[in-house]
Structures are given as structure tokens and as C-alpha cells.
Image 1 (cartoon, rainbow, N blue to C red):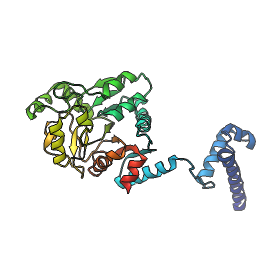
Image 2: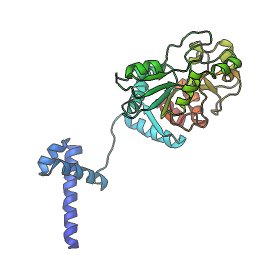
Image 3: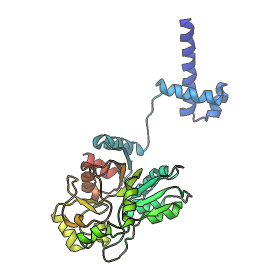
Image 4: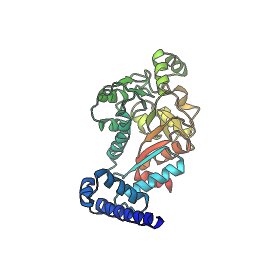
Length: 316
């Protein structure tokens, strides 16, 4: 009896090996395998799965993305990230690869039937991500901002995300009803007592995932170029040792949020440190290496979508 079972198992493994060869090497469909092996389609599927589970086949990924996948896994392990995606670096510095990858990740949340709250900061890369999202009809979701989109003198930023995305998917939008940075601490306190701000902050605290851009702190950095801070303020942040910012919140090389400078007047939703909810940073380019590394060290983000060049540099 034992010998009979052994023979039967050997025969089944032989059949599984043949099914796997037809599927992975000969590029047959499951229907074609079923016909050639004279089994049902479901049996063909189970045979291929058996070949994998019994380690009858070994995979070798021969593709330009193989290095990106390996780097992503190394980044995930090193910084204990919940998720990490690495895209090939663009020779022309284009953010399109990041935008496409981030959009694919975002879409997994947008297609959900269950009502979902998704939060965002703003910026060029995140706006590019939204441009990649197809039109949908998902009115059950809430799209929430963690940062305002105005300079304190009224000028609007060019890379708003929440309103734009909500229009594409027909969902409710909840922008932060304040400037990025208030003119004074007193004004910030007053703005954050508004019911509209309290509602947005409550929704952000319930968000299933938050997507944030990561900006470097330097002359003509995003905050400065967009007019959210002036020449004197960017100079002060650099003197205080700031290397990066998330939603306007500046931090030093250790990822520690500053207690001085414009951080005393940020009118958006406060950041968690260390972050508890899933917060995915979307940024690339070697000019952002120091800002990205510090954000990872300081646990301002626990997910990352970046490019190959900056990820390799961070790992080195």
C-alpha cells in the first residue's frame, strides 16, 4: 500500500512538472495545458501550483526591474517599512515613473467598494500621480488634505491634490481651510479653532493611508519656490539645520521636527512622530537624498515610493 502511494505521488509530481514546463517555459495557457494533459482546467491550475510548492521549478527574473525589486526589499528591511516600491531612475530627471507607480498603488485603495478615507499632502509629484488616475465614480470615499494650499498673503499653490483627485473619482473633498504657514502663531491658533479645520483633522486621523511628498530645504526648494515661505524664512530654516520637509513641517538630518522657525506657524494638520498610520512618501532624485534619508530615520514615513538612484545611494 505504501509503495502504491509512493508511485502515485511520483506520477503526480511528474504530471505537475510537465504542467509547469508547459506553463512557464512553453508559455501555454491553462486551457491548453488541460487539453494536452487531458485534465480539467482546475486540475491544470492545481498541478502548476503543486510544482511551485514542491520547488520543482526555480525562478530567475531576467528584467531591468529585478535590481529595483532587490533594492526595494533591502530598503524595506533596513528601515522597517510597511511598503516600498523602487522605479528605474529617469535619465532626464522626469518624475513620470514615480507618478505612474504611485498611481498604481493609490488605485488599489480607490477601487475599494467600502468607504475609505485617504489623505494627501501636496506637491508636483503627487499632482503627477493624480494625473495618472483614470476617471471613476467612487462617491463613497473621502479625499482629505493634511496641508493648506495658500501662502499667507493669499496666493494659491500650483500643485493642489485633493480637489483635483476628488473631481476625477467623484468623491468628497476636504481641503485644509488655511494657508500652509500662518502669518503669526496667534493667527495659526485662531485658524485651527475653526470647525472646518477640526473636521478635516478628525478625518485625517481616521485615514487608511496618507500619501506625502518630501521636499528638500534649500534655495528655491518647493516651499520657497511656491511662495509659501520667503527668502528670510528659508534662510532661517537652513541656519536651524533643516534638510527636508513634509507638508511644510521642516526637520533636521536626524528626522527630528524643528521646534523653531516656520514650524511654529504651520497651519496644517500636525504630523505623527514616529508615524503610526500608514504614511507613504513619494519622492525621488538625488537632490532629495538627504531629505528622504532623514525622513526615514525620523520615522516620519513608514512607506516609500522612490527611484533606483536615490535608493541605492541611501543604502550605500
